[in-house]
Amino acid sequence: MAIFSQLLIAGIATGAIYALIAVGFALLWQTSETINFAQGEFVMVPGFIILSMMSYFEIGVIPAFLITLPIMLFVFGYLFKKILVEPLIPYGDFPLVIATIGLAIMLKEGAKIIWGANALPFPEVVSDQIIKFSGVRASVADLTTLGIAIVIIIGLQLFLTRTFVGRSMEATAQNPDVARILGIDVDRMVLYTFLFNAGLVTVGALLITPSYLAKFSNGETLGLLAFMAAIVGGFNQVRGALIGGFLIGIIENLGAFYISSGYRTAFPIVLLILVILFKPEGLFGRKEERSI
Amino acid sequence: MSQSENLQQEIQGTSLSDYGDSAAWQYLKWGSLVALIIFLIVIPHYVGAYYQFVLSLWAVTAISAQGLNLMMGYAGKVSLAQGAFMGIGAYVSTLLVQNWGVNFWLAMIIAIIVSIIIGAAIGFPALRVEGHYLAFVTLGFNELVVLFLRNEDQWTGGPLGVLNIERPSIFGYSLFEPTRFYYFTLVMLAISSLLVWYMIRSPWGRAFKALKDNPNRAESLGLDTTSYTLMAFAIGSGLAGFSGTLIAPLVEFVEPNQFQLLKSLEYLLMVMVGGRGFLAGPLIGAFFAEVLPEWLRFADEYYLIFFAIFVMLLIRFFPEGVAGFGKQIRRTFFRQTSPQVQGEQNA
Image (cartoon, rainbow over all chains, first blue to last red; front, side, top):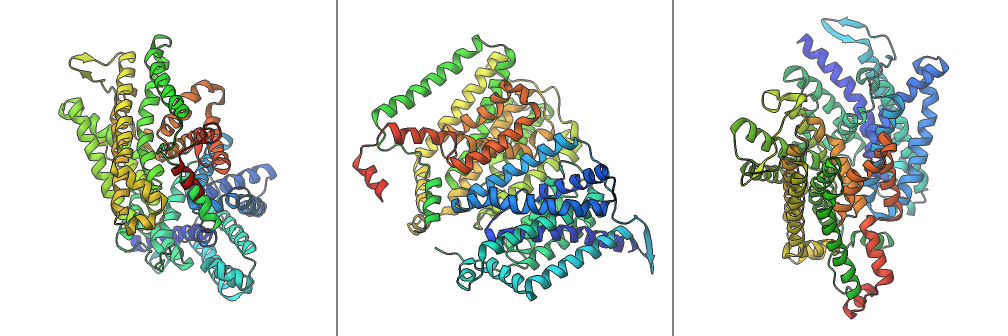
């Protein structure tokens, strides 16, 4: 039971990170119908950049993160939208899918050339100690990760539901045409979601890279997990992607321990296929109506 | 119709039917096909074993790309498991031959059938839903297959794979020698091309044209869009399996990394570069993926990056791919004269 609860906490902690990445993915989809196949690479790259900043400026991981964040907001938020997404939107979602897949390959191969093919160690935000709490053992790193992720998720939810800009973003996500009629600057809101996504993936990189290590091929696994979280939860709803993230994290951790560690990523895939079979709109999503 | 829909139709309307082609265009098209065939037949006399190997690889790759082209070019759905289906074809045929002593040709047929069945089983849930669910499911499936190949080492040989795969012989005529194997892959490519060509001309292919022109109308006329799309996916997967049964004896070993997700993504780029929905598209795409890197050796590990950037630029400026240039040329230099086509263009 002690092992089970420890695994559960670890699963919830990694799940929280998947949730962050999946929420960014879902936001992009909602506001601009961008299915970002490079989402995993968007997490892999800042991990490396934080490492480079640390060795170049000889600073700790947090200051390095603070330097990396604005760079990522500019590159993966602003430039990604302006250069790649915006020109392709009029052509429907198909070319955009191909373009983000191309981007994913470019980032992955680029990272391999710049930082090498080996996994580099990445420091924890806090030291990795084990604490005991009435028989339940949990690592401080897991709890910190969970704490940071929850603060961000709650902050994001409050922002989206309580502030004017947040509600305008939600309105844009639900129905851009009506939002425009209501006088919302839709383009600006779409840009905000891209910036949010860039921020979320950078935080995701800070939290996940200690356990994944910085490796050029991380994006493949992470991107897949983020898609699965978003689809399992239902990616037309932010809360769907959130819950999906936690679910995937838990299933992955429990499955790896109790069934087979070689098949770690297989368990979420099976869940994904089941969800698509029986509830394609996702466990917590809403059905989309077909328009002609 | 809104402007974006217009543009979308412009991209997707990559028509294969050649109604209204001028005679000159016909001559050019068939002439270049004959020239290509003659070139492929005589080339082994002028190049060494290595280039014959590269060209064999081109032919095998093109078969798998043809499968994906059926899916993307006609049904407009992205599949990201072409590598996995090649893996299924390669492993099933190899293991049947090596462990059970099954005849190579029988093993090949079994492997293709297995690929088709698995393709249908994967496509069924994903294609019931609109959108790019197939892309996600196939992405996951590719990962599953590679995990299986890596972990189940009592069957698959694990991460090391299977070495020393023998090349088959036909009626006692061994295909071991590179030139012979090259001609063998060429014949296989011809069979695959004829199959795809026949399918596109069949009522099945015409149904796809109707689907692409106006899905809602096609459906209202009683076309079961899902089952047609599923069929395209199953056959496309079958062709990948077919290509897999050829790549194993060509490179003489199989291992899980040959079939990982990156491979599937490469196939996607190939089809896009060649021009999806064009018969010649996969041949051109496979050329970019397998032959061109040989000439651009200096690019080395940067090649895939250039390839990806090239695809992004191509999509941005020429959404129809390289084979789409042919269509542009036809529009510019070979005026279409039939009144029916004029009417369609004005519509």
